[in-house]
Length: 619
Image (cartoon, rainbow, N blue to C red; front, side, top):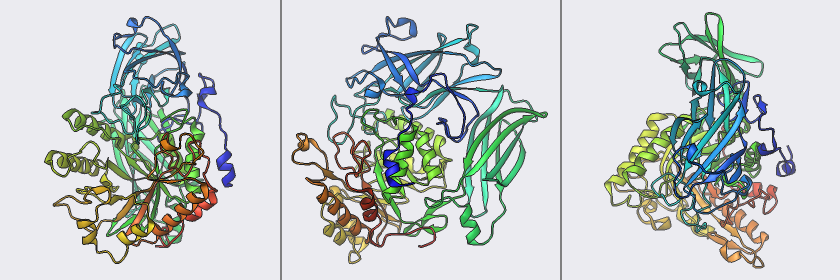
């Protein structure tokens, strides 16, 4: 595909689609890409809406009147929602009626994400409360359906704008965005949808490739009425080539099996089956649930054969050293905030990132929509997934963050694109990490919890500085002089000197009793060059660690900086700040509308300059 085509692609917005459209997989934007059923109904579109600033309403009958209409899944702070109110609104209400889909079995109602706390009523019956603004939840609404053929869903969302003890990422607690924080995202901000399933159905699926043994681990949980003698059939294929077609007995509502694949032998054949950014080969999975020759449920999924890890001072992909060229991605859009305008916008971001020469993104302070991860899986883009920070250290903040992080890992563990987890950024939420044992223990606990839930990926405990246990030592250094960076991290500098005396950001790089133990060293935030032309009346408000007043200057500075960083042998990768301009931050390589600030071919050439160029076969 030509780069120009990537920049100009236009796609249909979900808000313009028929609200009652039944979609089919695989490319129609199925909200949960790794467990897809053939038919589903999106509830995105027009909902009734009301603010409740005083918190007077506790159930649907308390609402005196619906004052607004809102386009779900866009937050009320966004203009895309049709409301665009960025004030402080701690409580809001939603309501929507839809025709109940015909069919037997169960009807499931799914919410992709509601920020921050949600309660749901269906046909006036209270159903569930969920806390956590970045993770999905599901409810079985079968028992509250009525005979009218119409189902009514009511949602209360609470999101205290000043609460610093909840995971909120880059959402500002002040009325107007300041410094490096952005407008808030309240309420529903990811897809709401329903699907029909049988009385017994596949509730979840998890994949874990084993590169050494040439196996794929498969875990499936079964929900509903689970009679004895249920079998699950799993078929893995690439194109028309069937790799495995196995049947397993289900015991106690779950199965966990290792699916052995035929070893393809020499590297040439093995490489054809491996997933990487250069060749993102996916295995299609077809899963069926059977009982006494009756098909109870079927779904489609996918996985990939790929492994990531750390070997001495290098990041490894598929058993080979791999140089990471990441870009910091905030995941915001001007008119829709944390919600992508449509599925095509998510795909376009992946394509633009690759077109600029990067092989991955560090999703910064945001748990991205699963559709972004789908496109990263399909098109080949590495992802570092990072937990959004709380900004106070309290027992409540610890409990909230720990619980939600476990839900994040459970949701996304099977995506091959995710190659690292980041639990903290720059000691946010643990401001006394150096002096206070409880703060250190919290960071250590999150690191080891992550390694327990997912032993197969590297974990960065605290990205930026003040590292405890960590698999990658990640450094943030916004020095605006490439020569100083080259000198600070160049071959003439001893590592002991770097960690003992050189302190980017005025912080120590490793805490006492946690010395560098040979892990890979990466520069995971640097650059931040803002473009602020002098004739722009808002130029003085443009955030950046360095400013350029014309595009030619920006192009030269980026090229010089990237050539310097790529030539530093100490680094096994980097992450440049940043992908796009984001509100007052004017330091993107792209404008907020995804238009490149200078030719995308020039960005790519600079990104790939120097010696830091490794692929799975060239390092």
